[in-house]
Image (cartoon, rainbow, N blue to C red):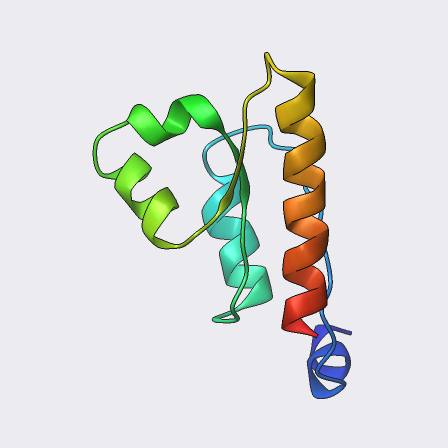
Length: 85
């Protein structure tokens, strides 16, 4: 299914219910080496190495304590999909 989807060269959003740290590598292995972004909680930006990787990859971060940030995160994700398609 994914191979047919990739041939169409369209942007998409894959949503996973994050249950463990293994979700991230499994999702990456399933999607493959495509240009994709994760939505991460803002607090992870402070974690050594991981925080730098999140920022360098330009992933979308959300401040879960700020509703305005949540809305801005949604808009940033939607914009990334528009630019990518």
